[in-house]
Length: 562
Image (cartoon, rainbow, N blue to C red; front, side, top):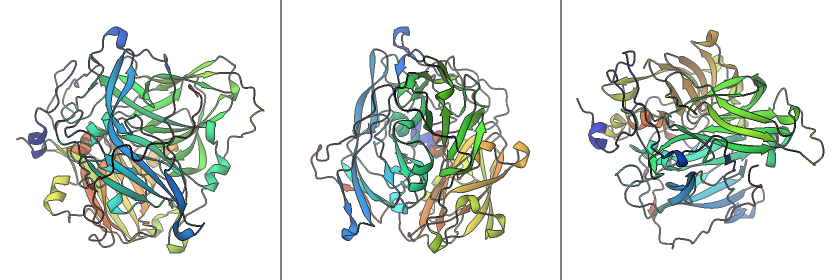
């Protein structure tokens, strides 16, 4: 039986590389050899690990800043991004066409301080047809991890068509964290993100700035994977809607780069922007890495690990101490991988660090043992710091099961098609503002892992059916993506803290974006589900300003390779 989704995209994507025998679509335990997809590049065009030079994404400056009603306590900044095609040098000797914010991949980094309201004007200047898919090149921008109003949250059906523009409003009242923005258009989120529509949005506050490395020693690492056609263009194969696993690992858009580092303490904001692949990261020296932050902010107690598991959309902030190494020493960041990835010759490598001489004053940074995130910003409204939530506060318990059924990925047997068919009224749950709930997240799909993302809220993982019933050591901080490994379940506490917002509808979905598109996504509402309608409250409009009306201005960057 062919599903609605399969009819929609039948024949849209050709398989590349080697196709192996496989078992039934809905029986992951059957003997199977997964579809193996590799780059079709000539040997001279295939990237060589560690030959590339590490680069940071450019930092976008606002085109306007000021104070609401002239009040210095109410600062604002306005940014502008244009979604358009661009050319990137991803592989030697060839150019790759990408779809990116401002035509670059990764998109510009937008750094914001807590309490500064931002408006981000996003124009869709892409062609009518998708870069990888044949459908209309509509886009939806989601600021992942932000407590935004529903109409600015990147609701999957709130699309911006080519030639239109939407002005997104972000409150930025939350504690410091590594946010990121990416496309979220229904049916083709995976293809649009894979094409390059991703960027960093770090949110800082005075607590984070006082306790963790800054500036040169605060380094964003966007880790993704891809495969390429012979001409250098992006290849795509979602392996019968299971996922895409490329044979080239990219860090900030550079294959397996080498970064020159000083003998200092560095903070790395690691974001997995692969659309399906998960990673298990470690250092080639076997030295410890210090976890200081998770998706939604700093951890209360710094955790020392030899490796950690990280799925799509998860962010981990880690410290690496290069003071112990000699000048000229080479240290690799490696990928030990996880179950049900498809691995290739060099996907066990991520990047390399080369220690260089430092003529500056001696580094005085100490590795912290504990961190203070300042507590709940909305304490006066009833907000509770995520890591202070307890089961005694719970007002409702819910169970959420992810599985594959009838060729489609489902949540409690429901798909986004069911939500659409209900007139967008079908809800998984309807907590009230500031309620605390306990959700048990269950992966019953057997042969796959699922990074599950709940929009709007931060979660505290309090238990797992693996790891002796406890959270893994690296996830003892506030989370907005929960990795559900094969046959794993996790129990989380969440407060539905809307800040000054009035609530509305938000999505829950698997962040293996192929699963999300086929069709593992549902919604919940906080308070009245009819308020802040995400598709009609502030819809995109035709852009009547000429292209180039908001020329990007970037902060002067760090030297190449740092």
